[in-house]
Image 1 (cartoon, each protein chain N blue to C red):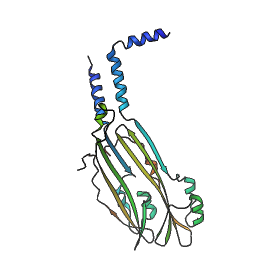
Image 2 (tube, one colour; image 1 turned 90 degrees about the vertical axis):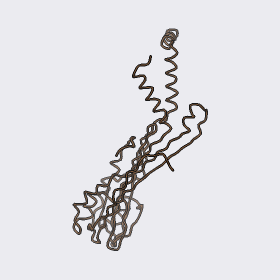
Image 3 (tube, one colour; image 1 turned 90 degrees about the horizontal axis):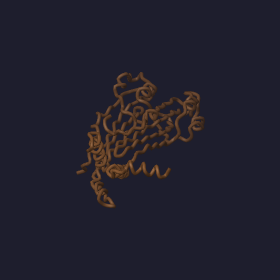
Image 4 (cartoon, rainbow over the protein chains, first blue to last red; image 1 turned 135 degrees about the vertical axis):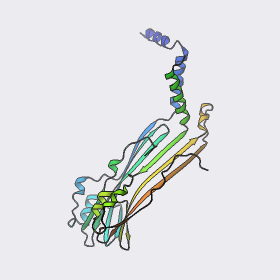
Length: 139
Length: 139
């Protein structure tokens, strides 16, 4: 059995040029870089059911904090205290010598009036559009 | 001796091999801003939700004298690098780095001013910046 396989190998590569071509190709591939797909996320996704718990004119500051935790940022504007929550998602596609990193961010802004009640909620989900892409040229 | 397919393959591999000393990297932050959608907003009438529907949640909110400003951002950057020492990997056990590189980036910012009653007032659109280009010459 071993003898047969050795004969087969010898017949296949009795021409050293074929073997050298294969070896050269392997060395060449070893010198080239590989590929990678890397994802990075900061913050938890904003679940739809959690967002729906915020009701304008009803939900208070404490309830917002219970659902989403302490805000990343608090902005004072126009008599409102605005709780700002962020989430980032990034996807990197890398092949040999080209790469593209796409980054998207979600923002949740909760406007709280001086009485501590939610007046307005603004939410935008841009991370759903973030894709793995490799090609860095063009649009 | 070597067919047309073989020749094309060898040329392709050599091209790939020579390009391995290069790097083309692109970083894109968020989606491009579609400013045409602002035409439908009516000052004093369109609400904060109308603005969010057209543009998504802002990246920043800042208080100004007459209300607040929503700031939306889109970023695009391109970096290219050529390692001229890379080819020495073929001849030497060590490959000293001799890199030339350059990066270009542009940020597109859109300001949307909101009145104190949280209705749309006006928007300030930055002229579209030049699209960044790939180039390795840093001088």
